[in-house]
Length: 344
Ligand SMILES: *Cc1c(COP(=O)(O)O)cnc(C)c1O
Image: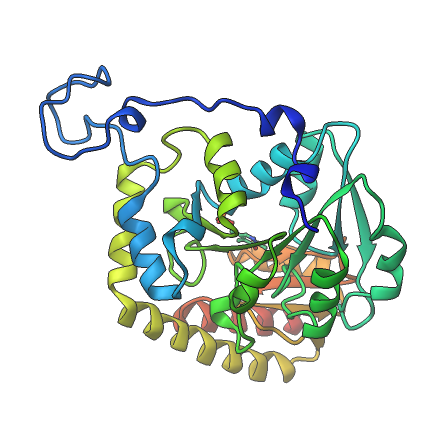
């Protein structure tokens, strides 16, 4: 039987969380003299620590109960919280498949946790055979699966993720930061079948709100309780909660933007494919392309010289540059920039 308590650090399981003034009285109406707030101004009150209105919007949109939704100060906060809740520093371990999103490593280093990195195969897929020996390690608490994966752009094969969900007894975190750009279905559909599953999404990419720092975790109510206990009391500012609510109210804008970005991605693929300096364009389920050039370092520098900034990923994938899909105008500048390089 799955027992969450066995996976949680003892100090976190027994933690008595901070009880804010708003935890002790949660009504909206009245004279509020309980939180040492300033009575004047417009941002004078502490924000809703549980982001109820925002969660209701997400709940309606995703068809997931609010009790299974956690909001973080970006997904980055959620990644850090999972280490702090489940991994004893210097004792427990986490695992991921590389190349992948760099925050899993940074958060593991901050928390003094070993991160095991299993290389993806030549198609950037998970090698399940390589993973098997690790699955029964009691010290292995977390597996991070980024799908669609950053920086490679692809989704992982469904049956491989399914195998991990069925055979790993620790916590599985599926990072779906780019899922709204993908034709692959979200793993949210199996959320209630796996008490050890955390799915993270974000408003930073497809919802165009990177500035607002709104990350989302979907998980069991038991995991939600732990996340709520450990997070900072008012982790999402009122301004950011409102920005998120406004974005979710404007679904047509969201859909229109995604359509433009996906069309532009196809256009970029077509143009890049005609360039001599381009060796390979990796398949992408996201809003970026990983492109192999004949000389990534030189191409990257030549683009910077023209004030076109891409992400040099040469150290992760040989001669690869990660290119985010921009506006039609920005993409045109990229194409012209690349064409002008090959001329000299
Ligand atoms: C961009 C990105 C995120 C988003 O992080 P936020 O903190 O929510 O902005 C999460 N995961 C991956 C893999 C990303 O590339």
